[in-house]
Length: 637
Image (cartoon, rainbow, N blue to C red):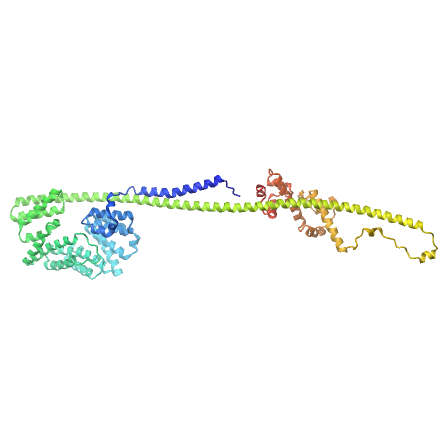
């Protein structure tokens, strides 16, 4: 039996409170620690909740990259989008701004997400992003691998927009391999196929397709084809773009580029007046997006407007030099244009200087690109390692949190079980107390009953002795009266005596006989009852039951001779038990008294003292009779 004291209960409560405190506080500290590696920019506070969507990341990509990046980081912090969507959006942010290695990291991670792998449309969109990324990194092997993967999946799903993407990239690869005519066919077919779809990024893809085609066609002087491509591009740039999120400033930037392309192409088609009109439109916007001024250079060269060409490029060269932005591809375009312009004007010395500067600049750019690529890869590796560390910390924190919850649940279950056990034991203890009280009352009642029985037997014995004395006295009186009667009567003749009626004498014993004599059955029952009472008194008073080997045969030692056939029904009738059970009941009553009177005795000693030497047998009989174990019986008293 479990017995808890107050201090034990308080200890259990203290343990539970400690676990609950650890459960609440530690995971918070662990999660906070996992955030140590994450930078938090105070400018986040300046971002309103309405700006925290992926649409604004795309909108601010070109106009305010830092703001777009902060929105992206805040979206990650708040987990406002699914993981694959966050990776794709951040990859687009870096891809659109030329950070291709960073973009590649997020694109690959999105591709490995189950939400992407198990959804064909998401999978194809992510493959499309990887194709674009490897195209910009000039990794033709990887690009061809993903183009083939995209084409097979698109054909399998019957997805025309993705077939268009795959076809266009196949056309570009054919063009770079020298098969230009087939390359143009593939690219044009891909653009026409995209026009017929309702793809959500349809206009972004058409811009890319037409601008790429236009670049190749101008380079190859396919002017008629270039004009058709330019007209198709104009419809995309100036028309509505459906549900696509517009990038701030992109429309005006593309319009300026179109003015330059129109001027170049129309001039080459001898539509000089129209070309000059577009040139004027371009000049009117020349101060805006002046990085795109290189697009008008072919027109100026074709028109031999060398002074204008030198003026525009020199002005731009000074601006870049003042900004310290001199080692760029934009500067190479300026140097190349100036060198060629001076060469056409016949100023070969100045032209040679620009060409030397161009060669040095290209070498510098190549070295810087190699170094930048290495730095970007190193940064990417460090970022990846940091992400892995943060992911491990998050996983450890989650695991710990789960473990603590499990421990708390186990502790809670233990407390519940302990409470139920205490409640159950309390009920059992109360029940046992009542039971033990009843047993004590029964023992006291039996003691009084046995005492009354002994007193009754003593009175009956005394009554029997008195009755025997009375009968003896009456018989003596009767005999004396007979003698007196015979002496007081005169002698009579024989015939008179013979004929005389006998004189009736009163029997002295009739005075003590009951009015109605019992039958033979009642006499037998009285005798049996007297015999049982005699045996019972003998066994109890002499404590013969304490002898483990006591049996019917040993009654003969006490002048009681009774057969087995007589003893069994006698015990069944008056003791309601067999003779061994009758003896065991007396022994168990005696054992109960010993347990109360001798608390220092162990159970084995009590068993031997009461006449049941086998402890197991004693334990079983005790529980069967009293419904409580000997130890609990003693403990409850």
